[in-house]
Image (cartoon, rainbow, N blue to C red; front, side):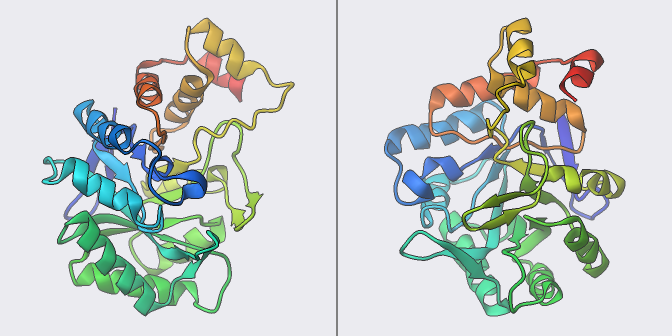
Length: 289
């Protein structure tokens, strides 16, 4: 199964429909070095060897831990590997998440990502929105499109966006992808300590209409209601794990969904990758809702 990013552009990117999100490779609270650095490097190499050709990262993971791990494990990069990073946020020493979205901040972030990832151009960059602040969306996006015109970014995406923000972004320029929180258990907006995270369900139909891949983060969120045993029942039916059924649900929900499940354990990576081979029936999908 593959999906094409920016299909109508001069330089589309076709990737397999199960990527890998690197956030979990960091230490506790998405901060600091991994507990097992050798395993973290092996996870990256194993994912690519298994056919994963879409990696999601950000320079504020760690800080800057996942970018450095990717470069150490995989550079020089194999042909066809797509690296996707995010800008618009940064971390404070107290581990809080704060906006870093003025035009000069976005430029500094892109230049930093280019250095640490050892690339002359980043194929896909998500502008992560951090709530309503002093910098309007159009000012942030214009800075991103300027970096795109300079050749530092190939494609621009949006992350953590409401439906209204995505509609506004589409009026401002070509939006290649959307990255929002989305899982079987969490489909709509959820409040987290650092702010609201809009859900994928709120923008999925708009993404489908415009041919924009939706990339779910926290796709293995297991906040399932105790009374809801449907995932567990299907896991037993297919001799699979609940995590695998959750990923299979995303893959069957829409051909425009590109899951990027993350993990810090090699065994879980291999388990997640096997989800791509599960085939849920229309009756299964109707049962899950």
